[in-house]
Image (cartoon, rainbow, N blue to C red):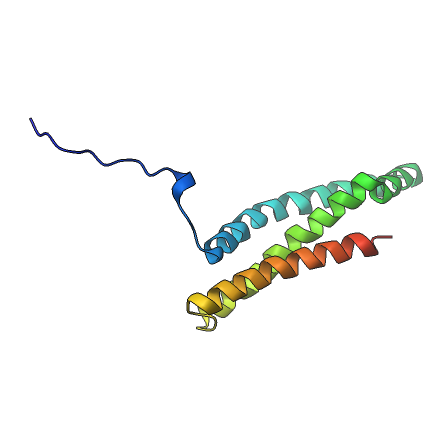
Amino acid sequence: MVTGSRPQDAGLRTLRLPLGAYASILHRVTGLLLLMVIASGLVLLRLSLRDPQHFATVGAWILAPTGRALGSMAVWVAAQHLYGGIRHMLLDTGRGWGRTRSRQSAAGVLILALVTAVLAGLLWP
């Protein structure tokens, strides 16, 4: 019988991922969420094209505070995925490598997506 110490599970909460890893994971998650946003948008479009009453109902829902909040979140999802994709394409071409540049580009993507969503929420009709 072998006696010795067994490997210990470090647990996910003890991992300290770099900011670039969070940006990469968020890019994948927003890709999935973007599919849901597009599907929901198509359902709303189909409903609004049914007749004038449904058009008015969808319009009122979109202009309500809940619709504004969900619209801002949808813009954030699209912006995060777009900016993250641009960042990944630049990394694939060899630009942005290195610890400092990678951290800066990841922070830039996160901040730019948040600013885009806030502006969309403020400019929502």
